Amino acid sequence: MSGTVLLLLPMILPFIFGLIIGFQKEEKQRNTLVFIAMAVEAGLVWYLCMGDHSFLLWQITDRLSLAYHTDGLAKFFACLISTIWLIVAVFSMEYMKHEHKPERFFMFYTFSLGALMSLCFSENMMTLYLSYEFMTILTAPMVIHTGTPEAVRAGLKYLGYSFFGAGLGLMGFFFLNTYCETTTFAAGGTLNMALVAGNENLMLIVFFLMALGFGCKAGMFPLHAWLPTAHPVAPSPASAVLSGIITKGGVIAIIRVTYYLFGVDFLRGTWAQTALLVLSIITIFMGSMLAYKEKLLKRRLAYSTVSNVSYVVFGLMLMCPAGFMGALLQVVFHAVAKNILFLCAGAIIYKTHKTFVYELKGIGKEMPIVMWTFALAALSLIGIPPTSGFVSKWYLAQGGLLPEAGVLGIVGVAVLMVSALLTAGYLMSIVVNAFFPGKDFNYASLQKKEPNCLMTVPLVLLSIAVVGFGILPLPLMDIISSISGMIF
Image (tube, rainbow, N blue to C red; front, side, top):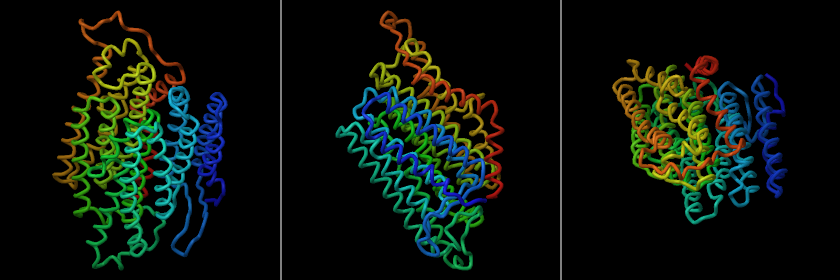
């Protein structure tokens, strides 16, 4: 393991590039800079993830420091985020032509990537907490970007919920600093059981509140309300990364707290585990039901995210290898599929200005590439083989049906099945109406409105991933197994 300053570059370069981009008014030069910034960042991240690196940035006290490390979990999330960030950036180059101040959007889009890389590579709780807060602050301008009263209210709601959730995490950090041997992340946990003795219930309360707080970013009930408010008002590329990636910031924090600080040996079989399983199951069902009823396309997709990210929380809270495998597979597959869906929504809005589901009859005849990619992503979220979503749901079901999962595991699997049916109802109905609008539809009004390659190529690449991961999931599963093997 080598200590190297190179590990700081994924956090520093986005801010340097972002500042340059923020002052670039000319479209072609700005787009070139954005692509270079995202490509360099992705290449650097993948290079660093080929080895083991650590770097101590600032030693504040003997127990508090800002430090970074490339362990297996950090590599997993960093490679996923940097790759999708690049793909969405290409789509955004065309989409942002119809938004005002695109240079400001791309500046904060680039800044946000730096904060996410800091979150991924965090070696201890202090670095994670500060990175988490910076992620919230730097992504909020993308929510508020349009400047409408609705966008401002949504941005403030996003900040309020996120700061409250992070505050619960900070409160827990105070306790962990006292009851842990160290707040540096270590597989299996770092609790000092001699100090915890007699205070077990206190620490379970701390864990529950921390998971609940970080679960806010993941859209978990009852701190989920910011998500369906923020997505409809944000530009579609921002909605895509908010749904597919930013929500995973909460997942990273939950994993670190659960598996790298408290440890599953302390948590398994406790009321805190049961309570979080219950909340995740409620969120899955509630999100699916609300999505089924919703008529505004982007809000329907937002409620879908509320449901689907809680699949991840459910798998994590099972605290078993199969559940962990299903959860991390779901992280990747949901990120890919939901980015497709929101980018498709963006392409539809960009070319037709249609925002409601009932307006999309026949849209598949006008935008076939867009709607075929939408259909593949929808099939993945439902869990239909050979799309990738089937694989993650298979392992989540395996984890839920283990004897140690008990009745809640069985209930969770049943809710997953119900959620899949509801997902089919609220997504495939769009696809069917898009391609088969009915004999009474005015076909003469149809016109080809397919967007250019800056929009379609990212959609096609992500769609290839949706099917590719479903057909060949083993390389990804091997990576997750190596992470899981360190924990269990």
